[in-house]
Amino acid sequence: MKIAILDAATLGNDINLSLFNTLGEVSVYPLTEPNEIPNRIKNADVCIINKVKLNESVLKDAGDLKLICVAATGYDNIDTEYCKAHGIAVCNVAGYSANSVSQLTLAMVLSASVNLNSFRNSVADGSYSKGSVQNILTPVYHELAGKVWGIVGYGGIGKKVGAAAKALGCKVVVNKRTPIADEECLPLDKLLEISDIVTVHLPLNDETRGMIGKNELALMKNGAFLVNVARGAVTDESAVAEAVLSGKLGFFGCDVYSTEPMPQSHPFYAIKDLENVCLTPHMAWGAYESRERCMNEIKQNIISFINRESRNRIV
Picture: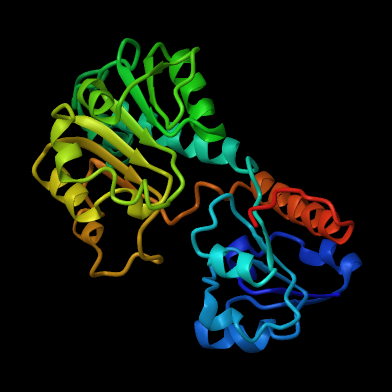
């Protein structure tokens, strides 16, 4: 069996990929440009990708390809309809990054809620030492207890964020496609109207693309927090940038972008240095334990496929 790993650099240099060697002949490529994909997968039985886009134009000559494994939960970078029509199986990895992504979500909200950077800087720049008062209490900050935390998308990550929010004393409200009995589930517009904090944890598909845009942002409370750790295109990024610049949003945190890496022409480039903005480079999923778990899950997906079993199958 021949296995091609097309963008190993996106998995981190500290991850050992030799675990796949027991399954066959492995070719590891740090990165693969679109024009390089056909040649690198044309003789492969299995292709492992993270961010590489696989569509008909690059798959049509991959006559030996039997399985695509994506090192992620989302698989919007794969043309699943083409794969289904041509007998190419597709597997993702569900749930591996819930701890890692929820941790960054909480870090962003907690840091913003206490103006952590501002208070840290007051010590680092010497202004606290030069002052005559034993404490600095500006900018003013407020407790999270009693605030309404709206969670858009309530899968494994959303549930972990919800549990933490409740532990902090927040009231949690949820927007999900199929409401559940043990949570307060609301339509999106109502959730946005009443929430002090909104965190987004959705896959990208035709239903979710652009679902938080200018009209939805206008519904939010003035000064509300918005954090997107899902997919960049779930929001209208230009509208979000405008909501930050106008003061509508009190804080905006984001780890994902419709174009990655974020180019200088991106709407968020104009707000990246603002004190009430925290932009991170699509790293929420990437705790060491999360990435190690992901690789082990992919190996099990391949073994299951070899054994004609169905495990984490999308197609």
